[in-house]
Length: 573
Image 1 (spheres, one colour):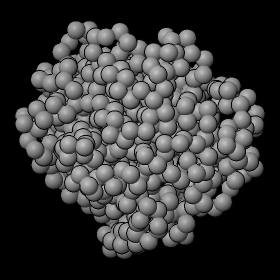
Image 2 (cartoon, one colour):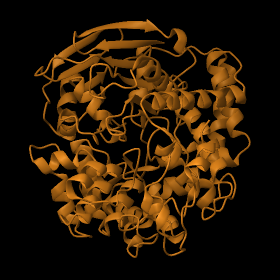
Image 3 (tube, one colour):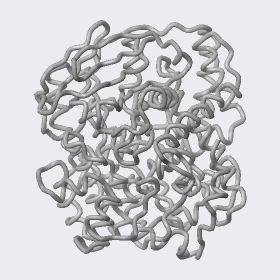
């Protein structure tokens, strides 16, 4: 496979051999390119920044759950390195074009029309975009009409066109809907700065994968499916209730952040739970089980219909339900679903927007629990409304605008759906990952709450730095292979899991991959990221939670934080 480099100013392109990037994929590849080719002190929206789309090492294969895409750049939100991970069809389609990655470089002249870039097996076509200014669902419908129903897309909404710091890149799912988000870090703004509204991959591409040892791969693939289908979380919990299965679980653990991280329990949790979500879907004719990409055997996504029985949204995740729910004191699941759809339409991150709306509530612009008011404010993003411009730049920006000092961010990125005082394993990750507050970078919830892969008390400091460090390394490796993060539930409990992953790579390449070598991909990925952030000006002081987490105890268990900045450095490679 090759890398496609596209100059967005000259509208030229070239196909390159992998060279020194051979053996890398996904997050390892995006972070290596950013660290080696992007000046750490550049402005994220400048011509010097680059936007990299990379399929994982296993993307050319039909290994279960190997279709995640990594998008990398210097983040407009954090000012540091960023990898944002998404489902959709993009990662599986790139190898069918003999491509492992696409890199957008340079920047067009001011005032240039937004572009659509169509990529087929042997050519790249630039076209003034016919969907500029459109929201994502309408834009996607028009793109499919122009390029064919099989076309696979990555596009930005109005927020990305305005280069707002919370903007996403939306990828098309198996049904062709722009429902899958590379959400965190504002990488949609980088795409917007490059003048690219949409990238369209030829859906008729059909390059075949050549295996180094196909029999070994088939053997490993069969075992891999067995690992995933024999763990209760990946075979029952997630397919049955989606990621929203966690609402009641985390609430009962006293770790569901409520009213901007003031409490760990929400009285309205049952109304927004995975059980309620599943009941609504079954009653209204949606889909309880749905894959975000072809080849998913976990099926934790879903298709959610509104009270009128019509399609409303898909990929309705726990973090979104928490953020617009307990975080804002809202218990109307249909209104939260409408918020999710609005964010997908405009092209903004639901976690960042939920915390942004909390800042509006803290500042008195909205009342706590006002779901209709939140919807109205979200619909201002991507328009000419000045408030929309403020909201679209995220939590810290909005807090400054409204004079709020209770701001739940690390490295300027807002915290997700687990209070770090009660789930300290993930709290250490929030503080120390190069990505800014990010639960997916080292999901200590496994050991702290779910008791998967061990039992480490999330209320106590002991053992959680080690858990976070090990999970950050493992996650970087999983992201680099292009695997779904949720395979971690199975591989943490099944001794076959990690060796099987290495065996899948060995079967693909024909070269034996040891477990240590595979884990080394994760270690080196993190070293690239930490090196970039250090050169970008980050220091140890940036690896810490906001002061209010350190000063306030969290009800109902009255647990605090307690880690010094010096102690937290042990979580880094």
